[in-house]
Image (cartoon, helix red, strand yellow):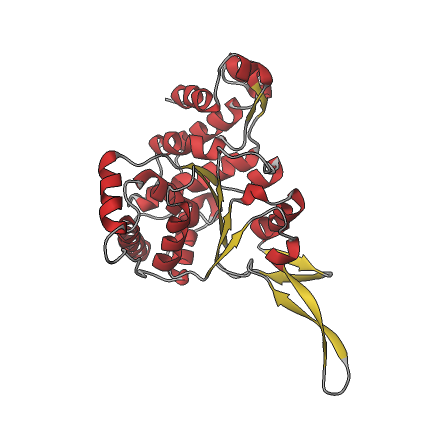
Length: 338
């Protein structure tokens, strides 16, 4: 067997690796179909969310109320066989409500000792519902868990389960009484997944499936160990030189200091850091695997450019005054890579 992690290479002649790829691709197809039986008309959203999980990252789901954000997370937890928790973020939520806390216990012999009670963060799939409604102090309680897969309580470190993913939701229209996520935390999300209204046909399916005598329920397809196998395989997929160049051109071109367009130099307040390039490299590999391909293409870079970049960039006041949007700017950058 001649498989190596170095350089992200897979020997295409290795029958064992190809057999594993085929098995995982088939399983991913069944996962996608199972989610599609519950979530209607959101193929792009389902794809980007699965890409996030297969790449081993966290996702920020942004959409108005009623677009099945919660239902999507719950469905994925069942289909993927993950232990899940849900936290409703509110202004009075405290860090200990997420991480857990220590309690003082007494024994029969009269001895006292502290015991740590784990909070809901100790799960495999955490849904942070309306994350921007909690205070910055509470939001930051997730930072260490999202980045380092562990939390520190009273000087002790506790590992979160493996795999560990955060799927956070955010309402883009009600900003009163909210706390915008700081750039440091936004950068921890692999993708920002924007959810639009469903098409007329999809909404018809929603009405028929959810207002009858029985609601459609998700069914388990796989388990956590299979997701870990897919995540390991993603890091082995080769990335061609042209794809790497496209990723670097896109991310570096989105920074004012190395701008690829005059609009970037003029209108971008701050651009994406190296973590954006890392996120895009992992995400295009995951998308390729989800589609049954052994290596990503430039089309994958184009498809995932917006979800990777839009929460890692900020426009200046001049851009808003001139009517420029991040979506249009990223579209210009994407067009430039071919």
